Length: 219
Image (spheres, rainbow, N blue to C red):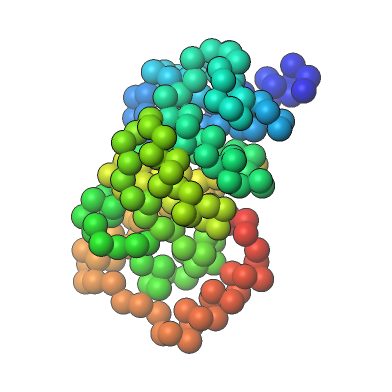
């Protein structure tokens, strides 16, 4: 990879972090983003740096084994590595802390996924948005809990922690994070206004079939 290409990618990561912060999905040094450059090189955001004020030259680099090649990588890199190892199509990962999505995971401990049967966009854009069981941040357990949802799920809510979206490029991963929080906010508002009401069963079945035709990409 040329230095020009590397600069473009690191700047794109910085831009995405600023967008996430602007939408209240990151606070202080929360969250992390990674981009897979090759079979064995991964750019990842640094540990302990406020993402809204991060500079491209602060980006860290690791390999698929978790070895640090440059900088001080995120303490949650094990989670990213598990996604890359289990999802051959994954080229980018966005982990953020979207408030409504996290609130759903805290207030509804028995839900397996966001109520997709109420909202057509959840089904069409993601298929489903499952809740991943809680695991202590920064530990191997985070990756272990994710395995059951990979590679079939590209947008996930991490209980009592945050959310994760992966894609075949960074823009797709960012769209996934946007979709998670936007859907969670709509459903939370609907619940407050009068309750959640599912679409007719035949419509839900139709939407899932249409999603299969659309493909795996996050919309």
